[in-house]
Amino acid sequence: MAMLKSLLLLFIVFSMGNADVYVVEKCPYGWTNFGVRCFKFFSQAVNWITAEKNCQKEDANLASVQNKLENDFLISLLPSSSTLCWIGAHDGVQENSWLWSDGSLYDYTNWCAWELPNNTGSVEDCGEINWTSNRCWNDRDCSNSIGYVCAKDL
Ligand SMILES: [Ca+2]
Ligand SMILES: [Ca+2]
Ligand SMILES: [Ca+2]
Image (cartoon, rainbow, N blue to C red; front, top):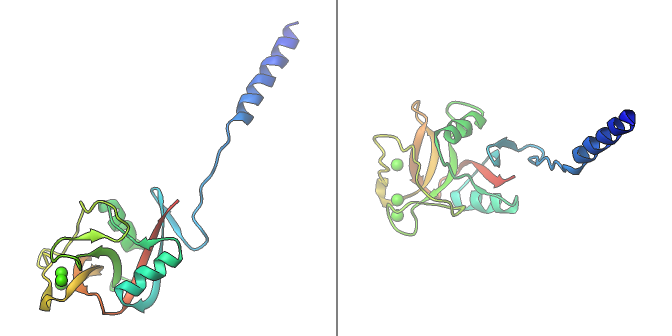
């Protein structure tokens, strides 16, 4: 009887184990997981709107950056310390009112101290990262062509 009880207990334990369905979410090939999103750097130099549209074709947006950890992670994806790269920040709708192209809240920034951002020539409405050796953000003319990083939810 004790044997039977043990077997029954074992059966229950195994049944419970099997009842848990672990769905392991993975990023697509070539994308890197960080937090609850997947990120990919594209080296093709394009203007900001082309970069955003290219990201959308990948079911993604230009990366928003929510905190310093994400910012450091994005920089780590870039092939060199001098690689400039679009992110999803833009103030094209209203000057100095920055938005993320993925619709997330704009509450973390890493603008270079001297940039503020500075809107040089009144034409800088898009954000790039890895600017200068400080590796901070710069607002840049959206029609310039540089690489970009896309992000999508897991
Ligand atoms: Ca503007
Ligand atoms: Ca601007
Ligand atoms: Ca600037």
